[in-house]
Image (cartoon, rainbow, N blue to C red; front, side, top):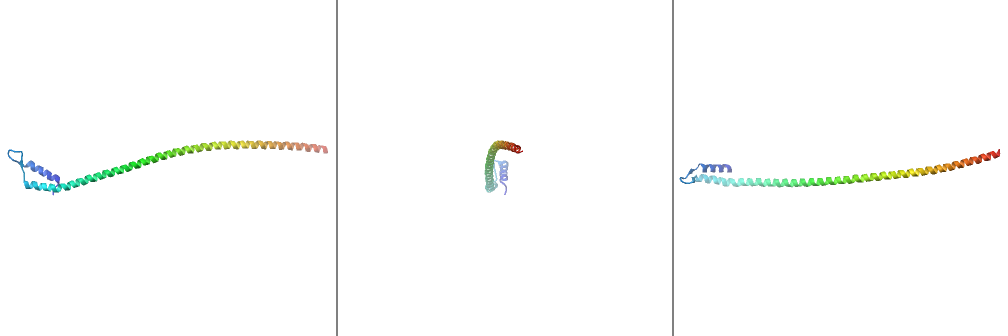
Length: 153
């Protein structure tokens, strides 16, 4: 069985090579041969058309699948971008909070250090005053002891 293209080419050649009917634009063809070729075309054509339709259908399915995959990839990329933006904002907020906590800790540290210094200063001052009073008492007691010791002699 010849292909559709071969049959069409053969019919074309038959018409082109056919003898002309005198005084007309018409030609004479072998009826049986032309009819046989047309029958072959009729048989071949549906199979070729079906194959072409199958190819078009498969192409359309591939295009649709490609579009679905592209949409899914686009959706994934958009979600990833939203996640990155969200994570960036979370990191930025966390850094700001961390900086605030560090500043508060440093302020509290300075306040505690000042309070500890003030407390130590006050305690040392009171200790110094107590020691000075104690020294005065010791000096007075020594003077009394000398005074008593010189009376006895």
